[in-house]
Amino acid sequence: MDREKVIEVKDLVKRFGSFTANDRLTFDVYRGEIFGFLGANGAGKTTAMRILCGLSRPTSGKVMVAGIDASRRPEVIKKRIGYMSQRFSLYEDLTVRENIELYGGIYGMTMKEIVPRREALLERLSFTAYGDTLIGSLPLGLRQKLAFAVAVFHEPEIVFLDEPTSGVDPVTRRQFWEMIYETASRGITVFVTTHYMDEAEYCDRITIMSEGRIVALDTPSALLSQYGTASVEELFVKIARPQKTGV
Amino acid sequence: MIRAIIAVPVLQMLILVPAVTFEVKRIDLAVIDSDRSQASRELIAKLTGSSFFVVTASPSNITEAESMLFAGDADMALVIPSDFSEGLAGVTRPRLQVLVDAVNATSAQLSWNYLVQVVRDFNREVILNKGTPAGISGGSGAAAAGSMTPASSGGTIASAGSIPGLSVSPRYWYNPTLNYKYYMLPGVLVILITAIGLMMSGLNLVREKESGTIEQINVTPVMKWELIASKVIPFFFIGLLDLALGLSIGWLAFNIPFEGSLLLFFACAAIFLVAVLGLALFFSTMASTQQQFLFVAFFFVMIFILMSGIFTPTESMPLWAQQFNWANPVAYLMRINRMVMLKGSGFHEIAADMGMLTVLAVSFLALAIRAYRKRA
Image (cartoon, rainbow over all chains, first blue to last red; front, top):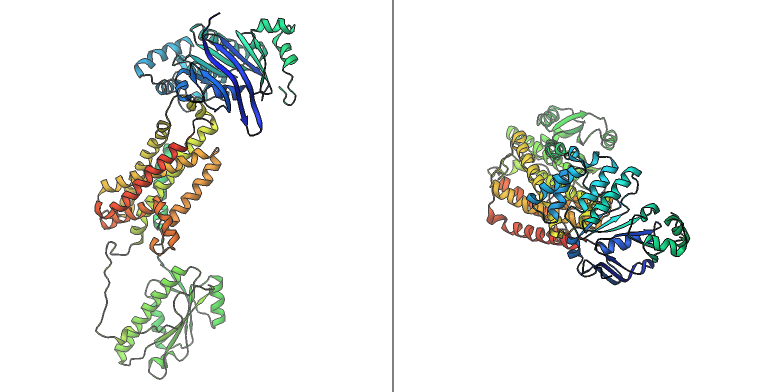
């Protein structure tokens, strides 16, 4: 297997004072895969993801994203990735179209490039009717789908999704995962954190974090047979065993 | 938001310009007339005829007058002793006693000066009519004021009558009618754009921190200066727009003179806005909530405005305060605005202040860009 690595992490450590949020993480992510990052709340998923995105500085260790050193040249990485944070973060006082224009513009796209792609996107999402609606007045499910669409609008190499489906209904979750598959099929690597264990089974490979460490990393089926569990949920309870934090 | 942008300057100008004044327009006077002569009645009539003084009470003794001062029922008490008319006739030296409520030192001083002028006038008439050079001497005391003395106690009131032939007639330049509004209005304009510059842009950035949109921006390749520029530019124009609105109100409602160049005026305001916007954004990069930001920004708004010389000349402030004003953008614009609007000063007269303001603008903006962190 000579698949291309788009993310290489070796011995990543992040400390906040005396608290170690990430303890010697080592993993690789290959181009075009859907990489699931699992863990209880407070396990260190978001911290690791923020480092990969250049939002936070690693204390030590090697972090290469899209071939670029995240601790030295985070701004270069930012051109090649998309990010959707846990907190909804499009501008609520701008319309759907304006938000797309804003982010397209920030990534250096011209209006000539933006407009046809934007209209095609709205068409594909059946969002055309909402094009001139303020984001603030859209229901949560639509907003989340839109936030994802905006995160990949500039065709990044990798998109990072931080618990993208928390708080949305099962139908929207299913549609959301269809969007993720469609994105991966275009060759965009998807790095997704979640605490929905059923979603983990949709991923190509999963990593389970517990208390700042990686405790398992493989394809869902390989992990299930390795630990002899019937579901990822069972597996998670078996190996993650958070001592201080509850899910 | 748009309504606030228009309403704020209009209301601020209409409320502050006429309200913020040191002029004393009405002095409540308590008179103890122990003489009850034609002369004492003439003096009182002269006082009440001056438009500043209103005799609100005639207490029968000094204790009663003091309690009126204490209660705030009178601003000033005038005691005319029983030998007043005899004194004017040349028998004894005529004396008056004045008690002034000097809690507000400025208005006490002004009231005292008004009284002295009226008494001086009265004295001159007495001298002219009777040919007797009997000067009135007076004693004043500051009541309810602790250490604040409105004027040296026991100063001799009369003197004009004794120097015939020499008359001083002042001519006030740049504000010939001594209209206090003309002095305050340029200052109120500065307050207006200070508040806009220091509050709005900073709040906007902190609000993005609170709502989380800033994180989405931080993960994009946007440059720090681009982000700061996006927070400066809109509020820069809002500030200039509000300044134009405020100036129009000054012209329409108060008929304020504008002697200098409008272009120069707006150019200085533009530099000033960059300075305060930069400072506000610097504060907001440090604050994580709107509350924190508001607390810091409000503190600086107060300090900057009160030390800028809007009410009191900066030259009479203690040395450290004058040194602080080197870094106070409000102080520069306060001076520039008054010079340009009232004196019609040109570029050469204000070049030094303009230069310093530019230095501050560049420094504060650089500080904001430097302090902004795209990652923790």
